[in-house]
Length: 322
Image (tube, rainbow, N blue to C red):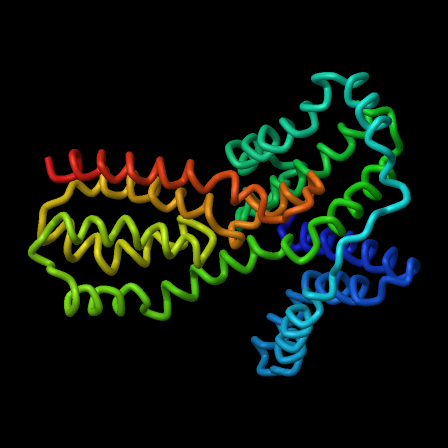
């Protein structure tokens, strides 16, 4: 039976490969960063099992490792790999392969969707192929493996070259590769720590709550601001909805929940365009494209974000109270 733990072990093996490669090339800080991260991925089950029986030492070591990652991150300076090839050879390869380049990329969502929809019905000799828990994530890991072999087939290159290119990209992205994981955890922390309740109290004490326009403006700007801070509109949404959306706009002023939610998320996406915390949108592409300015993507998106926000807020004001 395929379980999500196997995917974590596979990620740990890849991180160990990346760390050992950097160690051979005498990039000590970078090697330590990836080896520590690989240890956390590979040892997660052991830490949870020991914590369940009352042994807190592995969890404490994992916590110290996370702090060490934060200390190591500023030392991960970008460096060129000798095997990355020049731009002209990569362009010739891309022209030769044409639209076949998209096949491995399209396989990832396709295989993931098939596993999510039909994985529960697959069995061999009466044993389920996929564990029911986190089946979509297991399917995503399987899809990445399928895409790796498909890419090797399309490019007529050995699989190990794909793994080496993966290591090169991971080194180019650096610590920003961890931001999506950290932001997901941050959203959960904000929700459980009662930030939404605090915002509701703050709004009740300081805002003209009798004005629907003022409440809606604070809600929309709050979605932008919290998305800039947290890097993800999905993380900002429960905080702002619990603090202002539900108590003031929906219950007090009778706002349409569906319109408020959908257009509020669009306001949050304007914040996504403006923040380096949305690493997978703004920093990772800059690193992959090897832009000189890592914030060049954000600078190019500023006026688009402002324009979309103004139009979205105007439409929300016209539609949400009808």
